[in-house]
Length: 220
Image 1 (cartoon, one colour):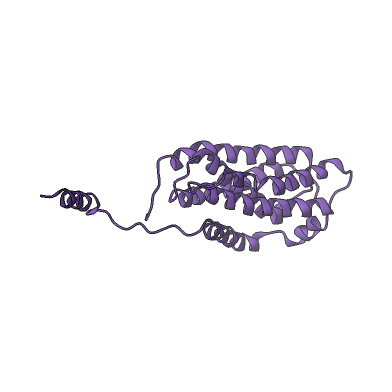
Image 2 (cartoon, one colour):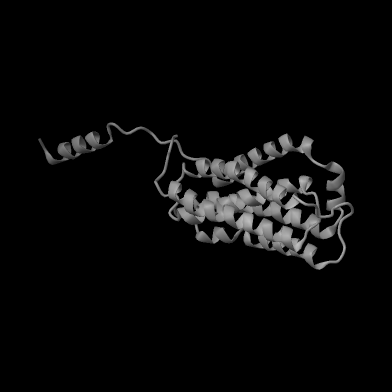
């Protein structure tokens, strides 16, 4: 057998059992798919919201800006997570949520500095625990969905990608909390929110990072 024939036979043996891999959609489309799930959850929860209190809270400038910042953070962090999950993409995408997150944090902090509050939004016993339960209860399923979607890619920095996913999930949960938030911003309330958000990001970075680091799941 001649040398070229042997090479062709070897190539045929190596690729004979391979199946074509379906390429993943663009990161933007995958991020939009996850955000659509967040929107669907919002539609399900909205009938239970306190619409009268929502109008009062959104009438307060810093609360309105904080809600906008949280929503923009969820969008930016989700897009950054999907982009960084693709090998070869610049890690600078991880900086995308920085500006909206600063807006979210800064506007939330203003509620602790001013001496007046939104009408009918006094802090009541048990409210802080309810906010914590809501943030955790919404963040966890959104995180699981996001990690499952990210596993189809092959992130070279799985912990970073997973942490961005955690930020997206936590910010989305904070945005969805606005219609249910029973009181104006206080130092205690802000601290509970911060601890919860950081906990979600850290859990995603560790647990989600391990799952993403096990390799790609193409076609699954």
